[in-house]
Image 1 (tube, helix red, strand yellow):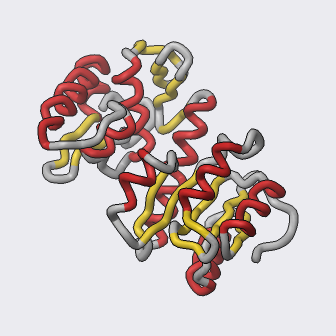
Image 2: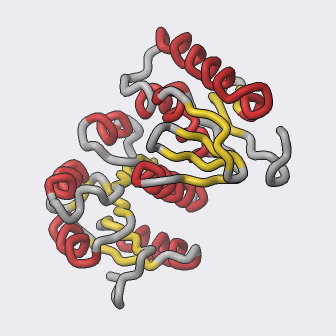
Length: 239
């Protein structure tokens, strides 16, 4: 288990696989995070309460319970309820439950590369930061209060809430693509199905129009992958 005084960048890893826990602890530490770890639900909750981590990486199958139990306990705690929880599981079918049943903030397949794991953690932390206040990436700054979009410090437009949430999601994931399924879950608050494709396309179309001719071009269609926000090459350029 990690020791020492937790910092503002503390990540808590809860996993009964000692090798996996040790490997990812070293990798996250090398990326600038302070890592603490636990091997079961009870130990993880106790450590979470004492350390108030920035984020909790939670294996779904644990010796004394499952990730759903830990998520429920975190959400029920006044001190921890806003702590981002990312569920890690070898079963891809658990992804839907992670969001809809356990109210997790993220999901990663066990066996994914560290780069994938790090990207998910950083994406979740950016989203939480944005939900709690302003979020800035590249030359854009998003202000949830009023759904305002600023470019290079100047307000350029106000978006309808649904379009603002979509832009937030695309910025969070950039430069990686966002699938229709993720847009359904995190923007439209519904489960994805084939008949939702036109709904998603319509929302992306409205966002592009709302952003205007220059900013709208940054929202790209990636065939077979989804949608992505393309950052400008230089700050303040008119892409």
